[in-house]
Amino acid sequence: MTSVLSQSETLTHLEAYVAQAERAELVKQVRAKIDELGIQYIYYQFISVTGRITGKGVPASHWESTAERGIQLVYGAMANLFLDRYGNYIGYGPEASELVAIPDPDTFCQLPWDKRVARVYCTCFRNREEPEAPGAYLTADCRGNLRRIHEQFQMEHNGLHLRHGTEPEMMWLKKGPDGKPNGGATQPYCYHIDQFEQLRPVVLRVIEYCNAMGLDMIQGDHEDAPGQLELNFMFDDALRTCDRLTTYRQICAQVAREFDLIACFMSKPFMGLSANGCHHNLSLWYGGDDTVNDLGLETLPGAEGVFRYRKGGENTFLPDPELSKTKPGPIGLQSIGGVIEHLGALTAIGCSTVNSYRRLWDTGLWAPVYADWGFQNRTCGLRVSAPGRFEYRAVDSMVNPYLMAAAIIKAFDDGIKRNLDPGEPEERNLYEAMEAGKQVKKLPMSLGDALQRLDEDEVIKSAMPGEMYRVYSWYKRDEWEKFLATTTEWDTEMYLSCLP
Image 1 (cartoon, rainbow, N blue to C red):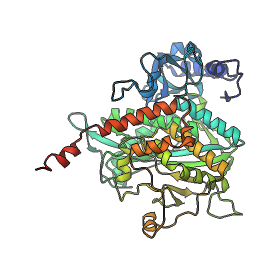
Image 2: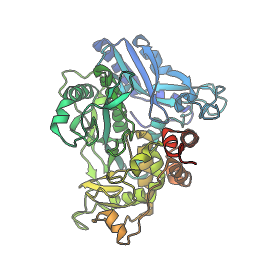
Image 3: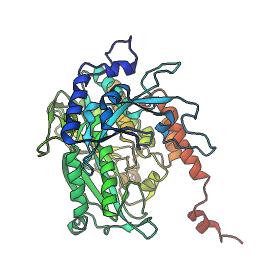
Image 4: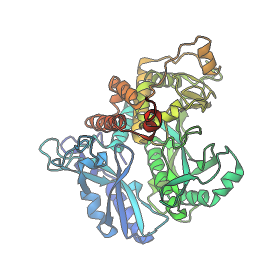
């Protein structure tokens, strides 16, 4: 839909959003799709601070009125309605008002595992009756923030925009008699086709559902941890990629229920074995056109927007042949410089849990712990993985992709505006280079340290405008403090018999 940044200032953000010129037609198109597909029930969903999918279900007969008025939930849903260690609701107390979530019709899609049900993503606003800023964008809405941050970036850089793809690793675990994890569904043999074959029914079910929900699946493999798969889908515009990663997680959770498995997105469930990363492959483009990819389906089981991909245009990360045959072009180098400049703060978003740092501390497993870049060099935090893109590696499977994409856009913006130079690419094994005397900054190695780096970085904090940073910081600092205040099995094993 058309950007709402240009809408009349006489309307509230909510009113302007609902009044967008083409929205009424999209609402009608969704009604036609509801009738065509026999949809009876719709999930209206938005994304919490941790990337959790939150919302309500409404009978499809109420589509038109809900499209106009939205659904209401307490503001605290943005922080999963969780309590901190002192018993306070994180972000918003029980006295706070209720947000209004307005559906985005172009994200409407049938659920392939129960075709009576559909889902639609929402943009969130402050309540219409709030005494201050009624109907304004809810700044604790990470998905809405990403859209607005990306639009602002495009306005300031002549249409330059982020396209990215993710590599979502996760593990398929068996259930024990108590329903808890009981090891991986396969052995930890990387790229082993026989292990991949053991999970073939799971893989094919995931791909079937993904195609039905607009994900153009491109490749997959068995990774080197028990039951660990990486199934990739085509890169696209930033917001659609984040929506698809979120959808992919929903699909995996459903397939796990169907096969009585556990879809594990925890970053590091097993020590001594690879963790679940979620590398981001990034590029900045001018131009291009949205095209519908029907993925071989006879009829689209959802709005066209779900099946659109941005194609063509100018990839500014490709090498400039007049300057180098291998290095990214100037915008690409400046963007790499921006990420390296802000890598410490970015780590608080890309490695967002206490468990994330088990991944960084488990040595010998290609952990991306240093702020350097190179070509196909997995010892660096960033690598040019192919001409025209680079891979940001300090991000794992628990990431909130909307926060991550917004923060990367801010890092790119700073790199471009300040013409930041990332230096020469490192071709050596970075660990050996450091032993030879190279000085390289290290990533923060705990959630507490990363949050401190984030607090000191105004550029990356600007990716969390308004209330977003307050809610995120509160939630994550509480998580860190709860960990520090908890006695674990490790404590008992380490200290129970140490004296006398």
